[in-house]
Amino acid sequence: GGGFDSQYIARRLKEEFPKAKVLIIIREQKSFLLSNYFQYLSIGGDRGIDQYLSQKYDGKNSSFSPNHIKYHHLITKYYEFFGADHVLVLPYEVFAQDKPLFFDKMGAFLGRTIQLPGEASNKFHNRKRNFYLNYKLRVLHAMTRPGSVNRYNKVNRMGRRLYHWGFG
Image 1 (tube, rainbow, N blue to C red):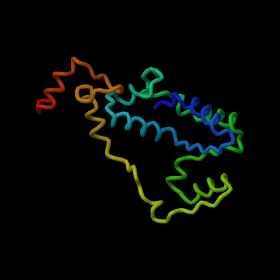
Image 2 (cartoon, rainbow, N blue to C red):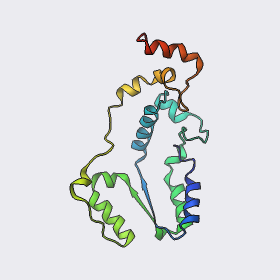
Image 3 (cartoon, rainbow, N blue to C red):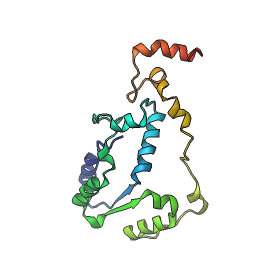
Image 4 (cartoon, rainbow, N blue to C red):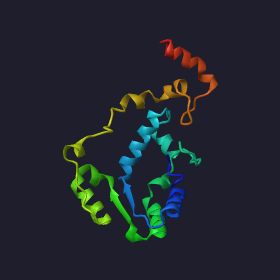
């Protein structure tokens, strides 16, 4: 969603839970960008990746902001609000590749031992899908899927009807 509300959320957390311990999970930026882009396509986005990454940030949750992947800004804000000893930053890749290490680090941060649930920890709930078709057919989104992330408009209505009738 562009992270437009991340500082607001940090401030609200500080107001509601002033002594909280905060876990921030970051992701390697290139894989984050691709994941974000394919999520954008799956909700009806119709721009190519270059257009998506270079569109003007409008502060809405459908926009991409390059500042969202400059993690140091958000981490610094959490350090400022909660103190560095109350903030743990872990990469998502550690979770994906070495769950015991990830939970050992989290447990040490919390002062507790975290027991992994065995086989359940190896389940995948959001496996990558083949996004090739969604990418190639993204131009149809403007005709078939009205939404805030594409350029759907009334002029495309006839194109949408033709598409649904099998002429598209």
